[in-house]
Length: 436
Image 1 (cartoon, rainbow, N blue to C red):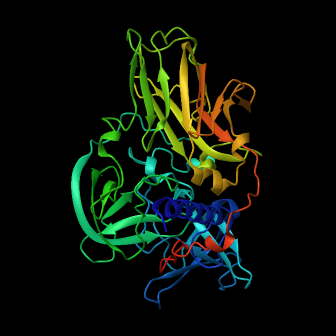
Image 2 (cartoon, rainbow, N blue to C red; image 1 turned 90 degrees about the vertical axis):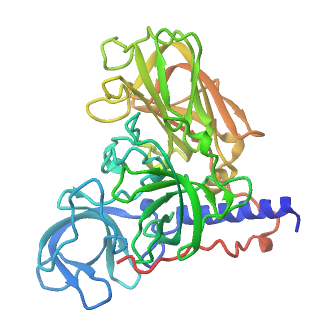
Image 3 (tube, one colour; image 1 turned 30 degrees about the vertical axis):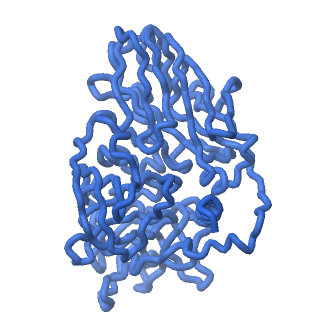
């Protein structure tokens, strides 16, 4: 098999796995798709079964002493790093908000998002963007955004060996590294978004794999994050691509050259701000604009984009414009969704991958850019956007900078060349024991 054919088959197989993951909720305790879960809030008494190797949690919601729901708090070692929430004790009265899974066997499971009003976990957190710590709590539900501005640690080079631990509660596993063989994560491994794949066919490791990595260390979380540069001696990500602020940076009213800012894991997702940008009116700030702004663009999960409606989103972006005091010009009434008008045009370039196209089953020729208009509360198509199907890009220029931009299109069922060759052996989704 030639290298080109192998790479093509690998890409299609990965896309099939991606598509399967996006659209299927498994009947066991792992790889659940948040979109397939009904968000519920239930109160009752906690029942804790400590007879097993790891405690198993239940909820009695009607006071009859019998379990009505099993509670999934994630792996036994998981705890939130942005709240003081704790797992309940046996007999404790609690209120749970989470994703309901009703199994065919009749038993019901709730994957916990909140306990007693305290944040527990975000079902669709774009963990690769969380380089400034949790900024949003439950961003999936209340539109608080993920941008962190310049408030982050500097990367420190590090080399590590250890065993991979995978949290497979939701569709895309989060990977951690255990370096002291105690079965507890010591580092979170940031491999970028699920659709990121280096050109050299290196694959993400699986649960239990022994690996060696080099990367950039951040200590913003209870579990330190390592942005992976090399995996087992092979390049995963160019360390020079991040820059001092992960692709973000400052613009000034007196600058005489434009500046380009980009998403941390794809330099082709970006915006070029030209000189003379000051002088427009930014929404909600009475026409006053700072002499300097910190610009940031992040690619997030489609599910992180609020008000998606009927749009079939293959890529979603959050754009932030911070004032020197740390306030975000895109915020309105303490939540995201605003816009700014600039005095000069901003050139936007958005890049999508074949994995995203195939995973969302989008007809590439129908891809278009849309931005959220907070004045009309609707998505607006960018009429003059240019779609380049050869380079997988959408480009346009505008004086308006919206907090949210999406690439969307029409879904289609694409005939595959050779179904027999696309069994995707080796690309199955793995379950991690236990996620009680």
